[in-house]
Amino acid sequence: MTALRLFIEALLLVIFAQDIKHRAVYWFLFPVLMLLFLTLQFLQGNRPPGMWQPVLVNITFLLIQLVVVSAYFSVKNKKWINITDGFLGWGDVLFLCSLCFYLSVLNFLFFFVTSLVLVIVIWLIWQVTAKQADKHVPLAGLQALIFAFFSAACWWGWGLNLTNDNWLLQILYK
Image (cartoon, rainbow, N blue to C red):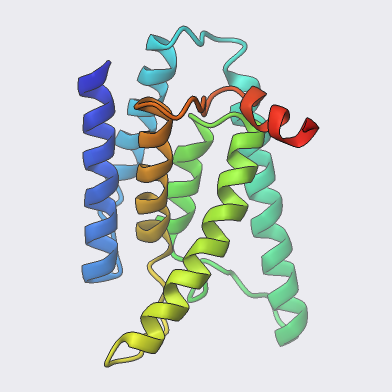
């Protein structure tokens, strides 16, 4: 299982590097990441049908987010706007879809919100310090880097469990 986790971490770093360098990521990396997450879930003892409920909830949440953001930009621009056409890359969507297959519902929501805030902060700092401004945010790459740290904390010693919401619920109830 350690080799699988290391492979996932390496794949996350490849996604980060590709997105930073090219503002694009090879699409086939995301289905590979999804399969690795499903394999890890299985090896950790999570079995169907119980493991599919969080996946469906996470994907539904993500779809609702995409529809709401598309609707917002459509109303704002007074015409239908497909947010994957200039606003959000397919790599960004596919990365988040991949995470749907591993994270529990609260962990997905926590990561989604936290990573978006961190990406904004990182990107603003980058834009201020960089010599050349860039309007394209490497969202999937930065989220992959953040998730690499998040998952490393889970897998190697901070007592987090990304497939179980108990650690987040304990924090909320304190």
